[in-house]
Length: 185
Image (cartoon, rainbow, N blue to C red; front, side, top):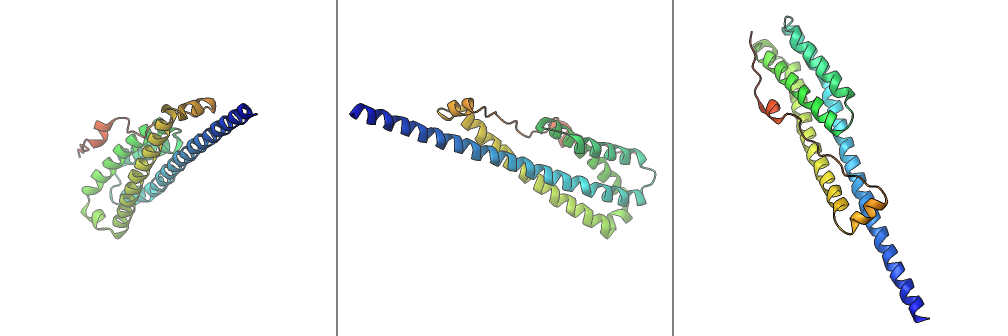
């Protein structure tokens, strides 16, 4: 009778460990999903601000249609991006287009003095800060999940239940994003 209880105790301990590891993986996966959702919410907020910003700048710089088209195209690409890599790439292109828009705005003192433009610029700056924070949170959550998926013994549970690693949110072309925009009139 004693070997039966020992085996039963070992099985019970193993089941408890499996449940704990599984629940830990699920919680971490949900954190990653939540972090990705936060990024998409902030990106959508920024993309919703852009038409107002473009229209404000258009009123002052009617002959800059090429810049407006690039911003509109970049916005459309960002809206349709799916997944971490595609979103990061579209966002990199969008940020370049925004830099061009702000460079155009710099050429118009009346526009820079406009209360509407200043408010939109302030909201956009606030949104950019929130996007950066969301990206950091997502990358931290993805890192935590990836570590759990790759370390023993949780890697055994992750493999059994088909948990997959998440990509980090990285800008496709970091040099292009950091490079100042060259504006020529």
